[in-house]
Image 1 (cartoon, rainbow, N blue to C red):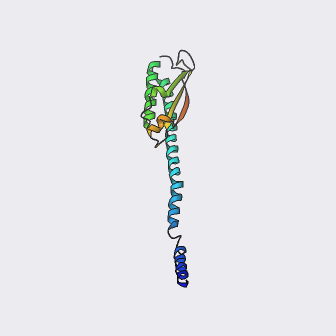
Image 2: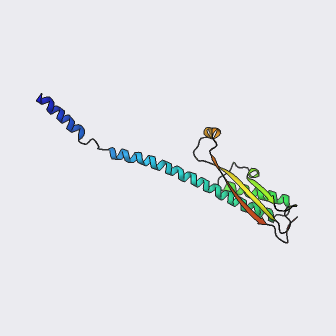
Length: 160
């Protein structure tokens, strides 16, 4: 009986001594994954949203300027669409149609009278990164960003 007790005491000692050896590494890796992966994804999402805002702001400002400095209304619309397309592609939004993203509004009729203003609005849907397309088909996972800009038609320019 004494031998059994001695053996059990040795087994308990072996099991309790050093039972925590190596668990700090596992805990560190677990906490790192729990904190690091969402933080990296947040940075990716914020970067993509910032690119969308840069694209929308640049497209709105440049399209308004292109419209008011063009020779006539049709040339102004074409120049505005080209400037929107360039601004969107510059920030990586290659699949966005400039015609759908741009809205032009003139303060007077006919458009581009001297002293009038032209307002542009550019809307871009920014998809969340690293989301598979089959999930996007079921749940809309994008954020719409928009920017407005108002440009004045030159007092001595105008209808062309």
